[in-house]
Structures are given as C-alpha cells and as structure tokens.
Amino acid sequence: MFLPTFLLLATAAIPTTAKTLLEAIENIPELSNFTSFYNANKFFASAFFGNKTLYPITVFIPNDKAFAKFYNTTGSPLTSVGPLELLTIIQYHTLVSGLDKNNLTTASSGSGLTVPTLLVSDQFNNRSAGSTLASKFGGPERANGQVVFISGSGSGVARRTVLSRQAGSSTSSVRSGLSSTVSITALDDKEGAWDGGHFHIIDGLLTPPTTCKATINGARLTALDNALTRASLWAALDSTKNITCLGPNNNAFTNAGSPDQNLTSANLSKALLFHTLPQVAYSDYLTDGQEFTSLQNMTVRVKVQGQGKDRQIWFNNAKVIDANVLTHNGLVHVLDAVMKPLEQINSTSSGTPAPTSAPTSAPTSTHTSAPTTTTTTGPATSTGAAVAIGMDTSRWGLFGFSGFLGVAGLALFGGLLL
Image (cartoon, rainbow, N blue to C red):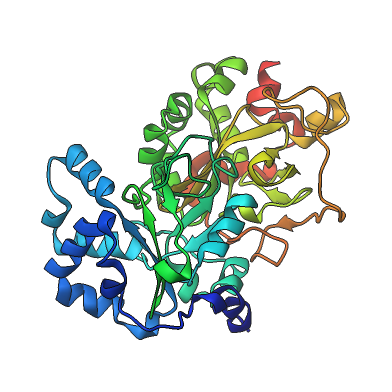
C-alpha cells in the first residue's frame, strides 16, 4: 500500500545514464576532498553506495568548505574519524528517496520537506515513523531512519542567510541536529544523477540529532532548561520515544513572570506537560485547525497562516519562531510565548492567536479548504502529524496525575501569573 506513493516521489530519481557515485563526483572540483575520502575508503564506500537494495537514494555530499569547517572545529581531519563515526556520518547524509532538483525546489518554495535517512541507531534515533511519513517514503521500515528537514531560507525554520556555490544566496537549506542548518546546491540530472539516484552539494556536515537536554542547552533556551531541571523531568524527557517539545524561548518566560524561577516544581511539571506532545509533529505536516492532545490531556490547536517562506505557525496563542529543532527522540518547536489553555483564550478573546511578535489582528488562513480538526491521541492518520505514538507516562512523575487536573489547575505559566 505504501509503494505507489513512494514511487511518485522517486520517479525522477532514476537517471538515464548509469554511473557510480564516484564516477559522478570525481570531476567536480569542489568535491575533491570527498572524492579523496571516497577513494581512501573505497571498499566501504563501494559496498555502501553500491547496495542496490537501498535504491533510489539521495546523498548530500559535503564540499571542500565543509571539510575545512570540520577541521577548524575539531582540530582533526574528517579522514581521521573511526569506522563507527564514519558509518553514522554516511548514513545520516543518505536520504531514502531519490530527490532531484525539482523536488528540492518545491520543498524550498513550499512548507518544507521532512525526509528520513538511513541512520537508525537508537543513540540518534529514538523515534519512529508514523503512517503519514511512512506512506510517503516506502513504508514504516524504509522510513524509520532519523530525518532531515529541507526548506527554503524561511519556511519552517529560523530565517538566516546561507551561501550557495554561485553568487548570491541559496534558496534551499537542510536542517539536522542541534539546530544546524547548511545550504544546498541542488544539481540537475546532467550533473547530479548516478545509478543509485541523485546527489547534491552541501556546505557543511550534517549533525546527527542528540538528546533533548543537549539540544535545548545548545539552543540557549536557559529558562526552559531551568524549568525542566527544577521539575526533575530531564530523565523522562530524554528517554521517552516520540516527543514534540513546545519550548517557549527566554523572552517568553520573562514576559510570563519568570515561572521557571517562581513556580513550584509541581506547577512547573503541570506546565511542562501541557507544552509536550506525545508524538512527533514536523512542521510540514501541520495544518490549520489541527488539534493535538498534550501530555496534560489538554487540547493544543494549530493555526497556520501563509505559505512558503511566509508560512507562520501558532500553537494556541504562541507563535513558532524556530521550527523543527531535531532531537534524537523527536523535535522542539521554539515559541515566542508560553501557551495558554484554549479555555482561557476563549474566555478572554475571540480565541484566535495573538502572538507577541505578530500584529494584534487575528491571522487569516490562506487555505481554500476548511481546516481539518483532528485530536491525535492514537496512531497518525492522513490528517495527523508525521508520528503519533502512544507513550507510557509513568516515568514522568507528577505528569501521571494529569488526568485529574481541572481547568483551574491548568492556568499554567500564563494564567497563574496574569
């Protein structure tokens, strides 16, 4: 049932002239370091990239600047990495679909594209593919590897300038772990096709996602870190599979009265539960009007406005200012405000989001069809997020009592401090 949809995505991936990956890259000057790297590990590389059972695939190949960045950062050449680290790097740079230049262009101009890779190690991939992601990429087994997120300079991630091989700025970028975003030089079939699919050039190495704690600390979300520490929830957050953390940034905590410092650990636990979804909700799968049930058993509603680089997303009243910060067990969407329960929003306003960084007028959806509203408490459906997996909340301490909390107890960050 999965194969036809996957083939539609990968149809353009089969080149007309057969050649190995090495033959395809060896005459591209800016890939000289990777060509040497391939030749130095030829037995391994040929066995990996010559495995036709993996086809079609797309390889993101680091250019010479990426090799230089690695050396400047680590003090060691990329050629010195051990075999396990080498395997991790190669797997995470290999996507399970044959994506041509048009696929990348479409992703960049639209809402972005989440694509699984061949990286399946539990250390970097304590998550699973839901039915929607699996149906797009050949089934749950093929789509089960850790993902990367492809977008334009603005769609779905924090806006930043990235340089391409040509003069000017690239319209395509790829996000990996620890909020790392590098630019893509997308190649057409004449230059970027080989007998296994396609390859494209990136200007930095992709970083395999790591734990929530390391990711949140790396993003300098110090108030969120402090809140999770005071609530003693780091162990549960890092060990639980399939999580979306809706993380207010530091200004959001300050604007809410610094609840990370002023609330009791019990109330912080309730608040953090409200900001945690028991499934992986990549931004390109979010739709206007979609609803989730948080770990606090309260509804979180999505609002989507605009398209492409102008696409904006809210969860309840809070606007996403940095989407798809990938972790080993899911992701973080960074918010500009702490969320309020829908009941509180509806009692004080029309119920439409009024984020701190947006105009006071309510955003209007650009979707022509009526919003699809789905409460996703079980496996993902075609209208749900990429992953919707039930989870055991017994390890979450005070979170286990969430079903008994009434609306008054759900005032959380904002309501307790207004």
